[in-house]
Image (tube, rainbow, N blue to C red):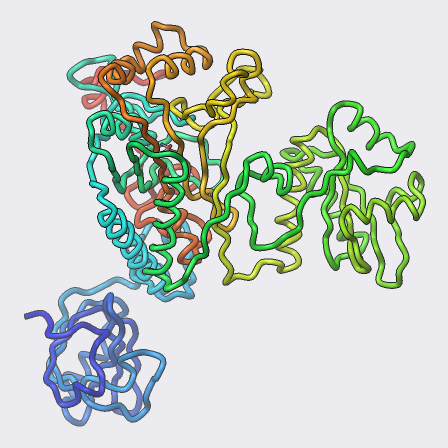
Length: 586
Ligand code: ASP
């Protein structure tokens, strides 16, 4: 028997017991004839003691143990004289009578503790060592608890877990497909699923009624932000439902997960319309842990000669701003930094106007030349500005102003610590548009995926003004992160065909790519809808991780590499030949 107990469970209750433990040597210290070893496993740390007086040879062997050696010890549980009340096993130690080294270890490349000297690259290369750190271990354990709570909840609501294949045909979610060459049919490729979207819809046609799957999805995207080429979704679909049924079911699910895993009662999830989210927060994933809304001024702006404001409005754009509460004392340097922030190329504003409502009651602005004090106070009223407040205003195309002020709002929150780290903001965003216009090409594309049902009352705009059509699409947003997307689906063949047509697929391409789906809709498709949670992101938020790499056992780097296995790598000529591929330029 390798062990009678684990390293996290022995306490004063066990004093006098003969036990066997196995684990890793966390550290060894020799102190005046005694050697102490911290023995670690997944469950905790237990102190071992070797006494030179009782067994000099054994103590000598203990002194030679290196960090991360795997050992087995037999001994007796004893009460410690100097106790460590910070850990459950801190009141006892094991007086060791027998020591077996099960395997030795080279000196590890970084310190295996929460505070480590290993940078992320090194930790990814030696991920199996990184996972020995309590923080990583606890994250993976919490992740498993979240999965369990999800399964419990959905099972209780009659959902059935059904596995779908990974070698399939393209399921468009707006990213590039990963392709797998076929050995048996040279020149043909499988696509890895960007999601099981079509397959789950066909399970509804198949009458399964309620499906879910904790499933890996693959998207060959450029590494914008915090993304992974493969990631996990809790993918769900239900038949005979309206949006409200979805909100109730999956709002309930996230509340259940929070209660089970964090023992936290999330309140009922509020709903915010997409248009309002964009107008008030400049984002379709607003962080509502703090207020600071965007205020549009087109209607209330006093007349002036200020060209920047006037031309923005004349060109159909907006003048809008934020009230940075309590920031009137910002220095020139600080306001300049904020101006640079909104001028960054991906935001692209040309500047930022500031109006300070000073503590001494005076008002000072960067547009004093164009607006007198009464007018500035009038603008201030739109923000309910008080003494001590700083208004930051921008003028340009509507989407640009909204995006920049949305980002600026988050930046101000960061600089001013407006966000309570223990607060949660979880809400639904509803009424997304069905289509988006590509700014460059002017082409219409789908906003979520091509299977979302339009709002029936907006069908009047479908042919004439398609970007005006709202979809029955929704997101769940947690602390400013999108953690779920979904929609009520199209279940009529003709509507689905109209959408494909609007997206520019001709009949031939449509049938080649989606004929099987349209065909299925000929045989009685129930009204249905569903959603998918981004599990990695939820785990990240619930464990306080900074990136989703922190919550995935074996993630890829930002450049898409697996540093531990060293992938991707070239394959040999023979393997390529078998799948009928030759590499360009070779
Ligand atoms: N398949 C969608 C996605 O991956 C989710 C859904 O609409 O259910 O975002």
